[in-house]
Image (cartoon, rainbow, N blue to C red; front, side, top):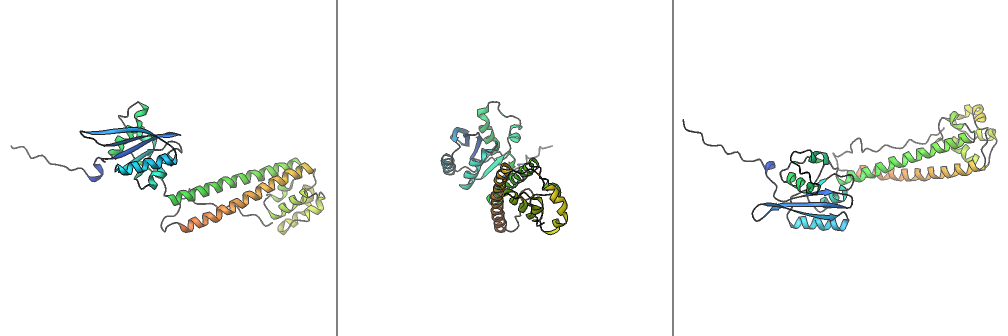
Length: 283
């Protein structure tokens, strides 16, 4: 029986070896760059160090474009990868971010650290590294604003907590009656204390809304030993709170604008969606 003719199976497009690739092993102050491309007889690697500065990375981007590099892989080391990823992506290169753990667990990796970039380039030319998700620039900008607002909101909360401890030190128990210091009524009473008013009946008369029914309890809570040093520290804390509130409001306005400008069909993920600060009470 005659042997059957061998069947030729052509590689799929995604299985082809990418001819010109670059890989960057990132550190804090520099990146180890490896470019793999066809040589005179066989494929070869070129390895050199590029400083992690804007000028140096932009120059690298121009060089990679001149050499026709088709794909760049950047290792996600701490936050050091950002300058390489953002600037090379901005130059129009096809840049992918890969998790360090994923590429180092592939069998056959060399043990010599300075060969990491070469190993990553060899994986890149075969299309093996699984890219990590890097959101588009508009989402990254939005995320920066929302994260800043979260940080400032937490800092403002810590100042409110410091103010509450200061009142406790002065034997003023308003938080036990009002439940929160963020209402307009408690703000009026604290400002009156700072300005020198010490009569609990006068202070309790400043309340508005539903808190008026708590007048007897407020008189008792406002009977304490609030002195000049408490007043000075309380004013400093209120000034800090007001400054933070202004910054948070500014960020909120900017975030609303960025959300409006997002392209249709690309809403922020829940982790990036902004959360409005708790509104000031009216009691």
